[in-house]
Amino acid sequence: MTDVSDDATLAAEDGSDEEAPAETNEMFGCIAGDSLGQTVLHPTREQYVEVVKTLADEGYAVVIDLCGVDYLEYPLRPLPAEVTPQRFEVVVNLLDITHRRRIRLRVQVPESDPTLPSLFDVHPGTEAFERETYDMFGITFTDHPDMTRILMPEDWVGHPLRKDYEVGNIAVQFKGANS
Image 1: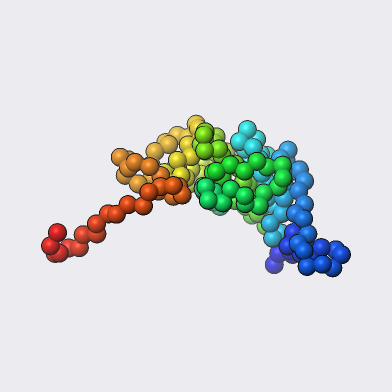
Image 2: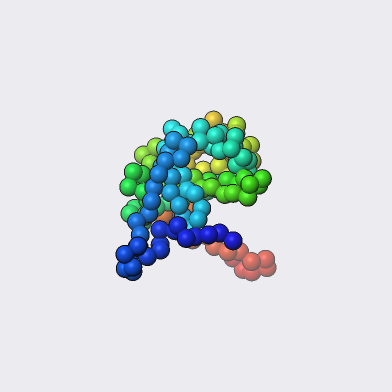
């Protein structure tokens, strides 16, 4: 069970019903915060791979998830004041099995340059996660061994999970039905 007594949603110390401000500090050289008892790091794109390498050395040996998020319609989401929000975000969840710990990384990725270094050399299991994020959001992972589509056909135009991706209409064909 996670102790959430330090969560930012607790009432302020003066007894009012207002939320206490979220505390931010620094950890592994980047902005760190808390979300319901879980540590959240906000590395820059330049810090990203080094922070993941350091975390691997600290015991965070398993990448549970790596995914993209498009905040086109939610640009003012809650972030530490020191973090400049960008349209895209890559979220990585790491697990330390030995010490039963989790940590989350949230990396801001600008729309004008949707690239991020690959984690493949540190965690080879991220290969498919990064390909899916590329396929669905158009975020390219540099130095990835096979940066190709994984879900959509190779000739597909666009990235379907982007908020500005036009919804299309593909006719469903049933066996034996007249077309």
